[in-house]
Amino acid sequence: MSENRLIYLPLGGAGEIGMNAYIYGYGRAGKERLIVVDLGVTFPDMDGSPGVDLILPDISWLIERRDLIDAIFITHAHEDHVGALALLWEKLGAPVYARSFTANIARRKMLEKEQPESVVNTVSIWPEIVSAGPFEVSFVPISHSIPESSALLISSVAGRIVHSGDFKLDKTPIVGEPFDPDLWREVVRDGVKALVCDSTNVFSREPGRSEASLGDEIEALVASAPNMVVATTFASNVARLRTLAEAGERAGRSICLMGRAMRRMVDAAIETGVLTRFPQFVSPEQAKDIPREYLMLLVTGSQGERRAASAQLSNGKFQGLELKEGDLFLFSSKTIPGNERSVIRIINQLSERGVDVVDDSQGIYHVSGHANCPDIKAMHDLVKPQMVIPMHGEHRHLREHCKVAKQSGTKSLICVNGMMAEISGNEPRIVDYIDTGRVYLDGRVQYGAMDGIVRDRIRMALNGIVIVNIVIDDENDLLGEPWVELRGLPEMGSSDSSLVDILEEDLSQYLGRAGLKILRDDDAVEAGLVKIVRQACLSEIGKKPEVSVIVSRFS
Image (cartoon, rainbow, N blue to C red; front, side, top):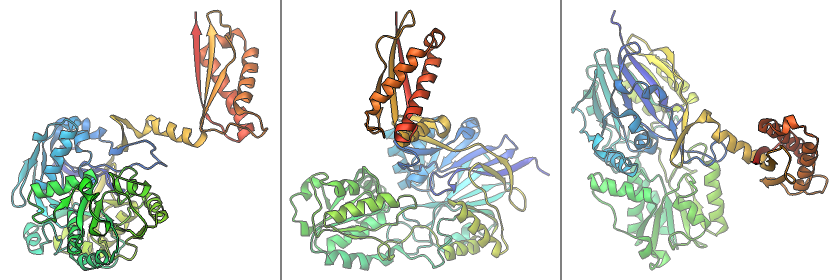
């Protein structure tokens, strides 16, 4: 029996939706040559990661094996698949391969982070092959909600893997290649050992709808609006942007794109030839001079992002344009779980302005880019893999996907982030567990989820903070009284006295009683002051705040 093995290891995207990062390897155990599929991000929220800009997969395991990495492959240009590339590439150093549109977006990201764009290689579709160590990899067109999305055919001496990427079975996607079952039959003709497959919509029992099914409904809605129309969708959904823009154009409206991400996606699609037809659009400056009834804005922020155009418009003016009573705002998108509160906040702010909001609660103005359960089954039937490993989904999605596979007699395995599966044999099995997690991008700095920075922010947000200042001279005598500053705490306590006065009095009494042994030891002083502050605050306001003690010594 060969000592070599074929492995699959998700570092992100398995057990969650977002932050996709998958590893395949072949070779002797612990010495496998590796390829990386996707390096994506997920987005923070104020509850769990306040102040954080982006969340990246923890690739420590991969960095330790940098010399074993032969290539990085990007399946498509969604942020949860390509968003971390420029932020992590320097730590990996491997060549990057993607199709034309995705490569265009990847190069823009590399330039923004002052990384070499030359490492991003543009690849054509199957049957073109990229040789990467023990693997031969081809990009196989598959429909999704962004142009040139691709599955990967990964071939090795131990068998062939189909990594589905994000997909749906759409024969009329408006922009990009339609799903071609004949092409796929040719691709998988020689057999497939493992299908590593998107699980996002496995609980949706109805067949998925085509992007082309939306045009008439959107056009009718836009045509019926008496005042200005604003529509938001995922900036990367170029097909939807074209459908919206064409509906506005046919209704006699000028189209204005608002939001850097949206303009970047449209520019990339035009540059790469993916988008051959798109209505002419005007700048926000030009839009200010157009009568409202003849104007349609396409804006970013469908998920309630605080700095995106949708949120800015709901708060007031944005780039000189303002929503008014009787305007129409369309959410041509689905709210990703976890973003509901942010989206509802924007909807309510729009309502307060008298804006009529139309969402997709009835499924009329949006279709998902992910395969529903019948389409997942159809993919299984088409590929006929020896085994199925679900990915791109929360644990409940992966588990349900395993059930679907096993119903048809196909071996399957739940493999979440950090689980290494060997797929060399006749069925998949877990052979190792890798420490993995999340890395926060905070301004220009990256740090781990276990470093305590975000934890401290949450504690300060929940409990407030007290800052205590004292001055001690070279003879260990207190110079003056301690003084206190409050942040995020009420000024008055339950005794109807100033909380600052109460704390300063209690601290003065404590320091007056403290002996020389304590006063000459900064750590002992700090411990004592923290204890006094927390006890007094618990008594006065029912909370134990965070306490910061500053001891200044003068000689």
